[in-house]
Length: 338
Ligand SMILES: [Zn+2]
Ligand SMILES: [Zn+2]
Image (cartoon, rainbow, N blue to C red; front, side, top):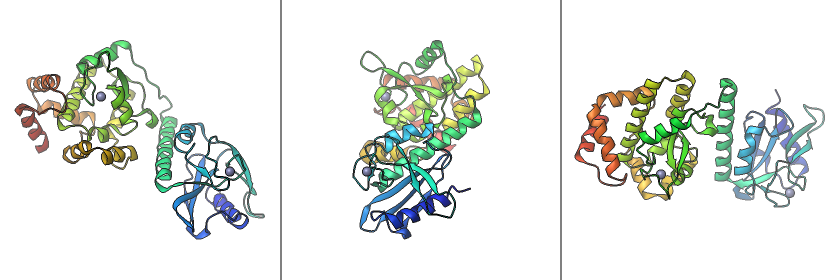
């Protein structure tokens, strides 16, 4: 009820009592998200930085699902406008609002000096908000699903490794003494991705951390066209293998949700595109992978078993960045006509 009103009134009050607050005409409210509202604006004299305050809207604490977001995107980055110390904890201050209307007090993130107004650059704040929104989305989904988690066996991991021919799903390098495999989630954990085998692919450490929580298909667009085909072949084989072993509806739902996600505005994705000529080139020529399991299977069915096997072997012989064979060309052509 007072999700918007109180912060606004609070700002009016801060504005009246605090000389380092921004000009009232330039603030805008974000949220409220579940439990937190960020109100931001600009100080007339400083065009490079956004000023903002973080208010609790539902309780007197930052919700636990947002804590990792604050630690990663606000700590050591957000600067107190009054004493210039960086934010380094989630200290909550109680601030006085205007008398006579709504709540008289509100709780917000405060500096150790007691001040509730912080500063960051536009892009830092954008990135942080983006992460907060995603965390909130995942949290809401979890509330809905109420059964996230999932599990897989060692045998299932071995099966996945076998299907991937012992290679990283993203860079195609062979796992070994120097290149360790890690479990990477198709639907990222931050988005509520569960530990079902079907949601897991094997990736080397560096690809895993490079991807972070970029949506699966969005990230695959940065890989070579050949590697995209390898990913497809792997996914087809995964679905076929699971079909034989049986599968729960929930695990499949997570897999589908992971495939459905695509976001070319993901800041991390944009950052890779900006820094890497090769990734940028790949992103401009690759088509997105199919957005669902059934579309992937359909792609698989359009290729004969033999063709798939050949594709698989080619992937085994050549590294992802090498020239593709004529065979691969034919298949690519086929796919783009679909
Ligand atoms: Zn301070
Ligand atoms: Zn890799």
